[in-house]
Image (cartoon, rainbow, N blue to C red; front, side):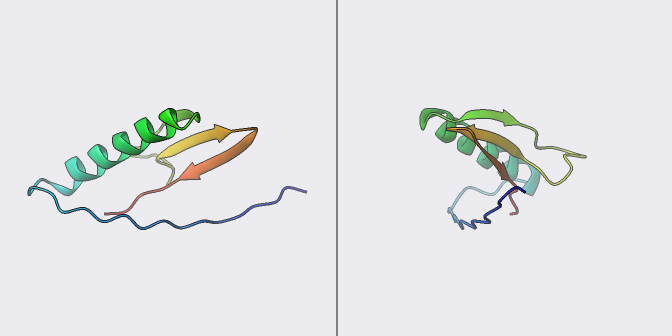
Length: 70
């Protein structure tokens, strides 16, 4: 049996006015870069029909799934 843990992190930023799509995409790409710098293996899947998964990542054999809302 697999064990799951849900962790929620809320990050807010003040930004110039852009569309919610542009804002979301930019944020996702920043998180992808951050995760890679931290040593994660990362696959960015965000976009239309992403199955509610924006990023899949793996670190030390543990899989992580990220979904962002803005």
